[in-house]
Length: 147
Image (tube, rainbow, N blue to C red; front, top):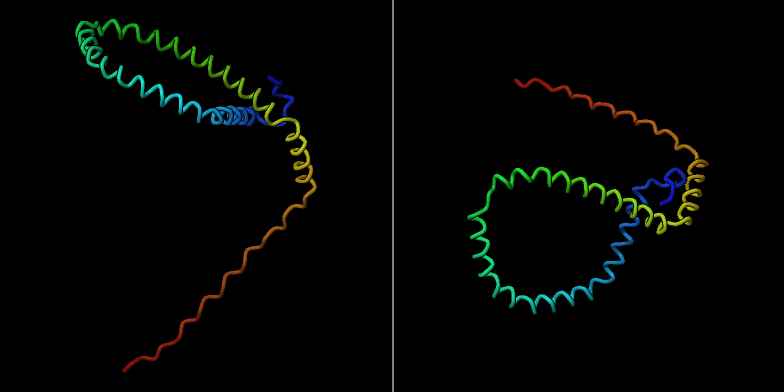
């Protein structure tokens, strides 16, 4: 990954560009994946329907003999270790996306940004717009007393 102090854009922009590039590459593969999955699903649906009844009975018997207090005791240590692992993976994935985004954005965009920034610096400040004076209030007509 490039040193963040040497780039012109925030790392989040590069990460977004890298994620977009990955999404684009995966979407290009989508038609082939869909046809493959539909064929596999049709073939395995029949097998799964036959095995579902036997699996349901097995799970019912396990539920009756499970020690839930022991499961609760182990849950907190497992959750904290999984959270730490997920955090490490997220940091690694983010760094990978930033590096990929830097390659996707490339130096051409940095040059274009320099041109835009220099144009912004040389552009005149907009003139202040004065508020319009409020319209005068209409006068009330004198009414004649009716007798």
